[in-house]
Figure 1 (spheres, rainbow, N blue to C red):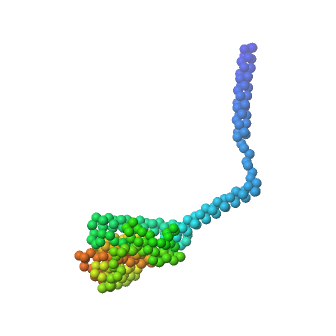
Figure 2 (cartoon, one colour):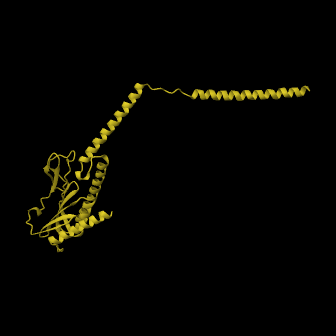
Figure 3 (cartoon, rainbow, N blue to C red):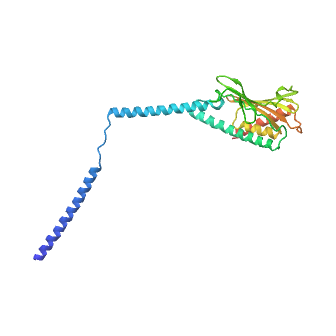
Length: 278
């Protein structure tokens, strides 16, 4: 009987000890959880207002810088590339302008390589002038005479507060003093074409609506007709563009002024048709 009582007491003691250990562990866990909790920092109304004003000042400064960048970007391209003054229009116009400049550069580099290697007839050196009329002159460009790597002079022939016209003059060019022997016109809803010829030299003027990548396509098609482009002048007014090409017709080609006007009209009709498809 005594051994049975001792076993009961022993089992009871073990259970009490185990319960005490479990209770202590739970208490320790609750204590550690209580220690990790930090009291929330309550901001005063002055601190909240100060933080709000700081955010407003930062945002105002960011918008001011953005507007200044957009203003400079807009001043570097013709006004016809920007229909509205919002951010999306300015950036979109700049992207389109840069793409056309890249295409024009590729065309001029290809033209230069062909002339250097003698793949094309005509004079080995010729001048090409690019006339743009942006609303403001490019920043940092002085209205003084400058020299280009090829030796031709960059002469600002028209400089006002709201526009600059640059013409690259080449003393070897003599087409400006020619008396035109033959003239022709071709007008349509797509383009107005005027051609003046004297011997193998021709002056082609086209007035049309400005379209993306139009210039590079026109130059490529004129070269396909075996015309050597001597000068290229471009004037943009909103969505209208005036192209003026001084070209030299290959001696073996039998083009009249009427033929050239008709061919150029077909070129612009083809460009217009493809633009509508796209």
